[in-house]
Amino acid sequence: MLIELPIGWVIALNVVGWLFLQLALAWIFTRLPVAWFNPGNGFACEASGRCYERVFRIKAWKDHLPDAARWFGGGFAKGNLAGRGPEYLRRFIRETWRGELCHWAALGCAPLFFLWNPWWGDAIVLAYALGANGPCILVQRYNRARFQRLLARRPRSDYRLPSQPALLRLLGPDSDPEHGGGTVLPPRHARSHQARARRHLQ
Image (spheres, helix red, strand yellow):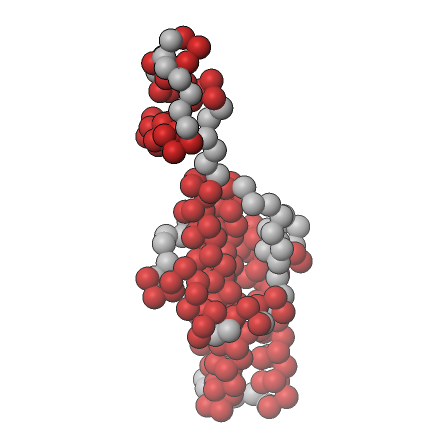
């Protein structure tokens, strides 16, 4: 403690300081360009988000956390999914990185409160900082891991076989019975033709 203050002032500065700090950081990060937030792949130990479900039981409490992005104009609300398209999922992933960095920034500001807090006040400040920001960081990482997994599976789940005319164009004229290309194949043989079509499309 470098600044000695009455206990009433210490409590007031802690309460007002944290409220101002969290809101100010949320506002600042909301205004930053989304292009600045480009997270990489998560850690292998995260197991696409499953470790958060097993270790932290995150599904039981994650929906009870506030979403500060809704409090400011232009913020990206993450409380509910507004779409399932790949572009929306990519934007959501970027926004989870924005939110996570905002909470890490708040944690990084905790030592500022050590200037006027006694040692036991420092312990309370650290406990609050971890309790207020730690769960939010976990949720952002959990959501990002899930959506990255979903996006990685998207091309296969969205795949559609081409129509019959397009399939014939891919396979060549020798597969078209209307042009002397043989007869219509039974389903078990048609699967091999579909496999050929897939290879052409990849």
